[in-house]
Image (cartoon, rainbow, N blue to C red; front, side):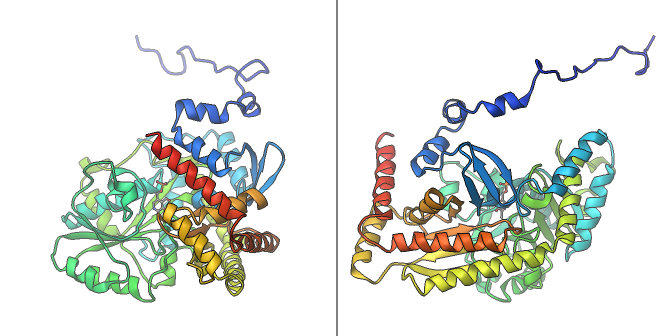
Length: 479
Ligand SMILES: Cc1ncc(COP(=O)(O)O)c(C=O)c1O
């Protein structure tokens, strides 16, 4: 005789006590932090961090700041590669997470239409120029994979065009539309056929579209590697061309979306309405992995065209109500805390400040940015002494100079930033959109001091260059 669920014996979970599992005991004992990574994970990461002096034991984050074990405060102008647009542990994000855990929502039933996902889909569709339907994912790269599949299914064509220097993630499909050789090398055959074309070149795009086999043209509205903005009018004209030849456009807003550039989506600056729009990173306010593919109705109807193809594309964590709750919380923050205005203000104040420093330092070349996505490109100096340092360092390695800015910013001022693009003299900043004017002044003052150091040769940061070059060479020699 079968037993009903109500009658069957239940597994009683143990209530936590002082002697049972507590994550706090792991958190409080961090001695093995780097050794565990050396022994059980990618061993290169702790080595690189140590070489750069980035091997900190961070113990807390709040808003735009991090703190290490010694209590030193850091200003985070990396924002976890752009997942923390609203800073860390925004109170609304924290409260939403707590509420969801307390509600014990019936999450991930799978054979279900979760309410919060529908609400988030409606909200995202209403703010997207294509008014599309929404497919939820767990990462940026998965949104790209999904878009490629959807474009192929809808157009019944195979070829995907992407831009030189593009970055769309590192899974196989996403890697196949990556415009940076260093990421592709060593991983064998990728998805065929894809082709990289030069940015802002409508002729090159049309030449390929004319062949009649292009499923989609994928682009970042602002290229993350190096922070390159499109020429005015290019994206709209590219969209018109794609449509003339029956190809779709895919806007990868994984980094530029969710207000980073001062608008909800960066394509809004361009008046474009892509067929497929990809969001991820800050969609969940940073704590839970999530992503969204917003695609026109016809595209969805091509992929999910019959009842027996209802799950022809799906993933176990895609329909995650916890992520959707965080997405709804993030949109609330965007709408209710003047985030777009703040992002525009923060970005402008930083870019204006950097441009003012350009007058003072000959190696500061172009300052580029839109909202809180900002880069400084350095250029070869004209003065004799500095020229010597510049060419010496560039002879040793084409990748080292930006580290002479990033490392002292961190070491001497506790500011996190990153180099951007292989073999390019570019430093990139992704400040949280919520940072204060005081934070910006602190950053600009620190950047001023670091640039002053870089404009004195020999000595100072140039010695650091030699040390880094030596470390890189001895690593290569040991292979
Ligand atoms: C534009 C863009 N697309 C896709 C990705 C990949 O996202 P994820 O790292 O979540 O896979 C990134 C990551 O930086 C990105 O910047």
